[in-house]
Every structure is written in structure tokens, then in C-alpha cells.
Length: 216
Image (cartoon, rainbow, N blue to C red):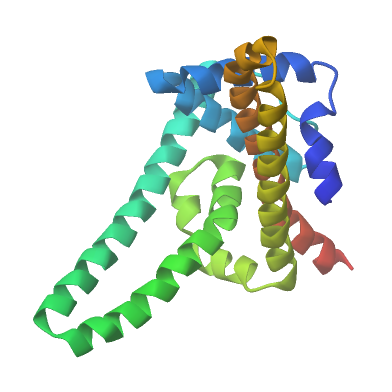
């Protein structure tokens, strides 16, 4: 599964074209709209990968834009909840240190749990791209407290370490030559896009593995 996810961005005929478009979107993300298109595409990666399909093509850009914007709204909503909990904890500490410590002991696990749940949240949202699906707390709970889910998280951490290490190593090698230095501004966005595709492919496995276990 891990190796398959690393290969996933290259498993279709027009993979180079897809990576070029994705790289351009990463570079253009400072203009905001390309960022949302990129998010929408990555959601489609999760959806199609969960159905056993190859990586999608870049098409229906308005749909990708809308889906990416909705994912951004979902992440903002969760972010606001985390910020609110932090503010409440800070206020509690100012009022009473013991109460603040108790609040911290409650809030910190919730913050960790949220970050741990992100793959499940994105998976659920990716299927129909309905905002309400990202807040199916019972379904999220059923997914994240499974052994297979922990394996996916460990794979995500492994992918992060492996890809980041390779990226640094290649960058250092390229810095030896003038041509390499010129290529770095292009290769880094390409690496970011590749890395994102691998992550969103692994997000697809959070439910896929559960279905395999149920069938067995």
C-alpha cells in the first residue's frame, strides 16, 4: 500500500502532463484561485483512489475550484473551533490557574485528536464534497479508533520523512551546479504537488481498508 501510494502519481499515461499542471498550480497558488483548484483536484484524487481508479485528469476547473473552496471552508471551521478552545483555555488560566490547567488537560487531547482525524475528515468530505459530510462525528470516530487507521497515519508520517529527505538531498545536489540552482524553483513546487498526491492517495485508504476488513 505504501509503495503503491508513492507510485500512484505516475501510474497513468499522461502523468507527466498532470504533474506539470499541478506544479504550475502550486506556483500560482499565491493568486488564491489556483490554490482552490489544486485543493479540488486533490480531493478528486482521494475520491478516485478510494474507488480503485487511477489519478484523475485536470478538467472541469470550475468544479475543482468549488470543491477546493468548500474544503477550505471545512478546514477554517475546524480551525475556528481549535482557536476558540485555545482562547477559552487562556481565559480560564487568567481567571483561575487550577481551572486553566484542567482545561488544558481537556483541550490538548482534543487538538491532537483533531489533527489525527484529518485524513478521515478529508476522506468523508471527498466522496460527495458536501460540507456536512466533513462533520459526521460518529463516522469519524468509527474510523479513527481502528488499527488500520493508525497504520495509515504511520504511512503518512513515513511518506513525509521519506519525501522531505529526498527533496533536501536532491536540492543539495542541484545546488552544486548553476543549472541545478536554476531548476530548484521548478522542482520544489513539483515535489510539493507529488507529495500532496501521495498524501491524498493515502487518505483514500482510511476507509478502503475498513471495507476490506469488513468483507473478510
